[in-house]
Image 1 (cartoon, rainbow, N blue to C red):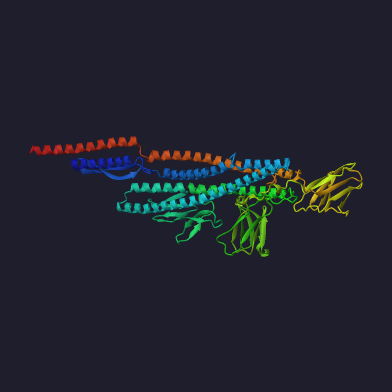
Image 2: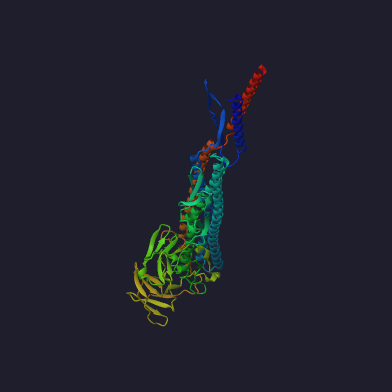
Length: 638
């Protein structure tokens, strides 16, 4: 081996190393670039009688300074960061809406019931009555605005999922194409790695995991297979399989994830199977927070509206007419699963929102071929069943304050999604515009005769739903033992029911219960009559005002309590999400730092390498120069 060739090999090695270093310098700011290193090996030795003499050096390959474990960790951390960040950003929007101290529901409910109290203070004041109507309209408007806002968030999630799925498919195609190119170039180069293409593929996978949680399986040491969800393939070698943004089979108003099958079909992803990345964050926010908040506002609107209506129906207005419904209420939503085969139609009705039995959950009605089951989806509890063999149609099955009716038999595995409160707030509104129609007065009254000598009392103590006005005045006369009742014509009238009530006795006429108490004397009389024309009476207005603090919802919470609970829950979840997001971002940053310390371009290190390889080049050039001098000297001897 000549000294010329040894020096030339050194020049080539130095030049290759300088090229690699220059490439590192050029891509120091390139996203996803992995620092490259020139691998040099001895060219071996040549045997002579005096031993083995070296033959210089060769460049073996150029390889990435790459740590697969750290890269995998970074992908997982990045996916989790985007999931939590998306969830935190979305839930903060609900938190800001609900917790608004000026435009939120809490202050408007306070103002509304304050206006009801004002009417009870001055029931004949038209200004107070108009103020109550204005406060009711403002409350109804805010409830509908909240519903509209939630609907916008739902629509926004559908749009974001569709857009994100398109990006996922683009990255999947890019990864599959890079797999193909890498395999071709590796084979054509005799196994040399196409480093820049490898970086592009890793960068594409990194971008993909920002959108959705994905698992990468390396095949044959060179090809990436990518899986999402419960192992659904997204990339297999040079083939990619599209994710789909499709309407949910159980609720066509929401977009969910589907997978393309090799046969061209599409299968819907199971609930909760798609996690990680911004898509996972959106799906989790929708199922865990948005649906619950929307249902809670819907339940509040139903409970408030129906409870107020029930009480308003028990009073009379300034015209002497029985009070009508004060608020308009929304209705449940029912969706037939798109895979149903029977053609059965289901409808749902709220039994009595004011009874407080409603929950904030959705429900599923399913027929398994033997039994009909109504399942509460929030805790997966079966709340009602009906044997198919004994079912008659239309079939009614209900629980938790609502009833589902099915017009005909369902086929096995047919199911319906029932949302009792999801969209109820959208239908909330006021029905009364005339202040005179506010039923502030009690429907009847009991007046003691001025001639009474005893200490007896008579009061209207209860009004039942469906009561009717007294057809005429009723005179109650105490005979020393009890009371007798006669109408205006002198005809004896018998109470519908008589029951003891503490020290007194309740007498009920047409759903109106009067309590007689005290110590009357024989001959004392009381007149029971309709309360028409009682402009100053506030009996029903007082009952309406008391609804503000009544434990209406599930027997444990008032309207304010239920709303405060929702605000607290959303606020707590928003804070927890923010903390979790910040914590995960910190972890991701640490892993990024660790990965970059291995694979990132260090300018100081590359500068040292540049000087080192420059000197190596100069040294080998000196070897060639020395060889030339020796050769010239040998020629000159002759």
